[in-house]
Length: 349
Image (cartoon, rainbow, N blue to C red):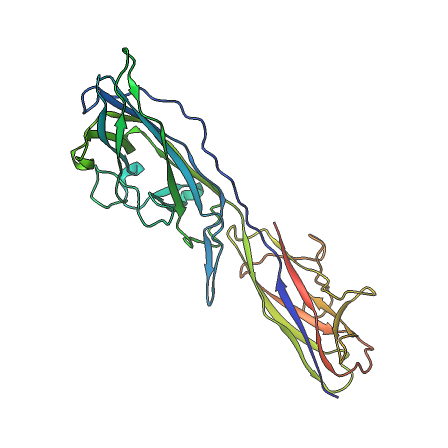
């Protein structure tokens, strides 16, 4: 009778952390001298906060990507005031540069780490938000809109309704190699010299706008969390032409953590654990069992379990681990057929 006995290792569920972002309260700034007589504008920008992110990758023969929570939204709010007795229509041009002026927008973090990101005018991330004061297209193009500002009435300046505009932000995926050990808080601070609010007569666009608006800086921040990814392959005991007792097999699992070491690897008891033993299930009616065990050593002395710090496997320099399997003694002659189990891998840190 031919029996094929296999065990499959499954990747344990990892995690994704998400964060909901709402605009914070904003206070107007003092308006600057207008380029359109009698009209001044003011704007504020909320912080752009990604929260916990994972833009990491690990690549040898295969590349794994964390790519968790890499998009968020900040908000720009602006309005204009008019002291003229007649309404005015102006063009508003709002520029966002980059602290330090580098071509690539990047947040600085621990141990000289950095996270590259971009700010966009559109939700699809195709139109970068740039500045009129830098090389055209360096980060994108400025925001430009026509604004109608009511006339003053009884000595009270007319004020346009506040306009809130999303600033779409995205961290570049797959840019931080696993084993970089650079988890922690990342940030970029935009000062007053990195943003500009220019106004001009209707139709002049950004090219003809100059001054007339006041705008404050803002912060972009993210927290790169500790994350791990696991790759596994099946353990195959092969074909047993008789009593499978004592058959052995091995497989390899690889762990990739962006903090490199200090983790522990555990294996649960599988789907068919009973009578104090892991079990392969199969046979003609999928109701027969063959007992087996998984070990951390080739001598089959140290059971690989899932009690952290007791029977788990500490991390090593290679991040690669061999799992040793052995069919228990005294199995007799189980019914013919394929036998399987599924074991979940856990990473503790």
